[in-house]
Image (cartoon, rainbow, N blue to C red):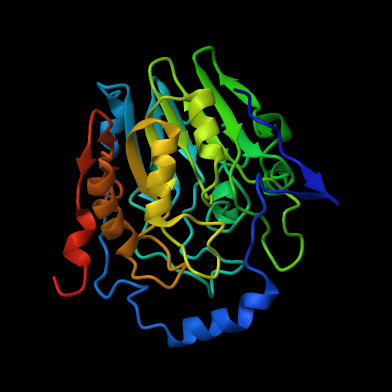
Length: 334
């Protein structure tokens, strides 16, 4: 099975299936919902601090696959001799300004300067919680190659990344890392834009990362759609599916999955393990900050899914199911 490339209409990228994004018609009821919301969207107890033991990176993972969850969708992936960073966000706020907007629940567990040598950086799309100006500027002048969705190259270059080190990928496009690792952009159901204007002028993607031994799926941001099954058939089976479970809500059901639909996507992908991301780091919705992972635990039991849920900042080998349960000590009433 082949993956269809992206499509455009009047200069804007289109989703794989009709999608209802958050529009102006929902703004008034959405603002009312935020104003009256009583859930624990921000932890009452301070999370962390979490600290990465960077000496671990001096020794390759025995299994060939090790992941450090920096938080949200930022992951340091060590796969079969390659080290890949996804959607790196180190700033305190995911916003157009550092004076307002969603703020981190915990500091990044390691400094950008403490990262091991990188073979690639993947940027899934241009939203503030995935494309962070200050973090990208840290890499300006470096020779680390970037792999991004169509249209994001211009933003990266404007922040100091040389064009020769940026590879733009459409859905279905692949790029080689040396001779034994392939990065492929695959469809997602989402949207793009960093303001009121200019929505969907750049593409959003998920990614398949296939090493010499392991095969993983990085879902980034996406609502549920039948394309997960197509991706599984075209590129699976996977050793690990990395899927968003947070920031869902009734006002935007098509662009974020939540734990129920994310677990269904995992099954569609034909993956051995599921790693939940995009939760527990920023306040981006109306649910309790811990609700996504607590609900996912229940769905995993019902659907017989094996989870991989490491503690933030802890380099963790992917050699079977692992649930750290790190968040439970911070839940209200415990």
